[in-house]
Amino acid sequence: MVEFEHWSLASALIERWRFKSHTFHLPCGEMIIIVQNMAYQLGLRIDSDPVSGCIGRWEQHHQGRTIEELCKQILGVVPSPKDRQSRTKWTVKLTWFHNTVCEELEQDATEEWMMRYTRGYIMQLIGGILFPDASDSRVHIRWLPLLKNLDACGRLSWGFTVLAW
Image (cartoon, rainbow, N blue to C red):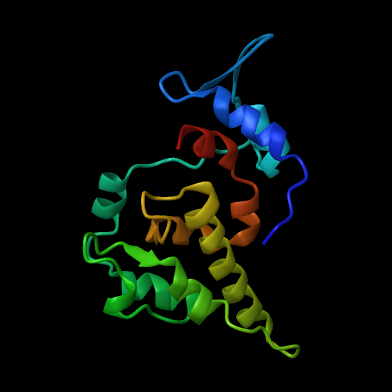
């Protein structure tokens, strides 16, 4: 468990959050979360090519390709049917990434294995922190192709997408 020293500050902010307007109502006025907060607090870029797209277009674009093909190509392993959500064939449980892709990294691991580990770890961050779903237990596979080239992925403007989410 992480120790947090400023419970009174956190409690005060929680009490002042208004869901309807997505703002904090403070004695000095209203405060809204802006994209610069995403850049400062999460270290996300806001000044380059955006991360965009919707589920419908993504699934249509990848029609004919399976989740197995994407995972095998980019991660080197494929989630079993029990590790996917039955509601949609394009989501994978975060625990699968933790238990399979991000298992103990050995000291003499190859560069290819370290890249797969990194991609799996980033998918956990995407599904658990940046773009969580209602259950906080799965991640949409549409983010995986963005991780194929990690250099290009690092140059994308994730801040606007996270703020919009």
